[in-house]
Length: 137
Image (cartoon, rainbow, N blue to C red):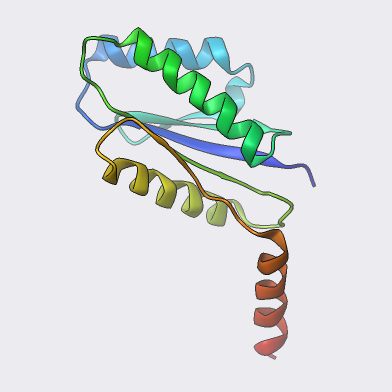
């Protein structure tokens, strides 16, 4: 029943093992729930942030992204982030991942380090689910 935020980070360029280890160390330092952090593909990671809404999550993620960019300064790397949250909705993990990966794709289209968040309307979402449930009977 609690809100949570899913953030998926990726580095657009190929990175060295040392850079990847730097990123991993910063994730461990800044996010205390190590069982809620995961590798994502070969140049990224995802983080589940419990008890945050989308606005709080975006603020925390943007601060962390700046910290990463400062740490890799001079390497010309692009740190893109896609974010989604439950936002009062009862939805599957699969749907949350889909929203965050779609946001990540949009962030990567920007061709610069950015954070894109999927902002849902819980009322419209509940109406959609109700219409789908009762319309298919």
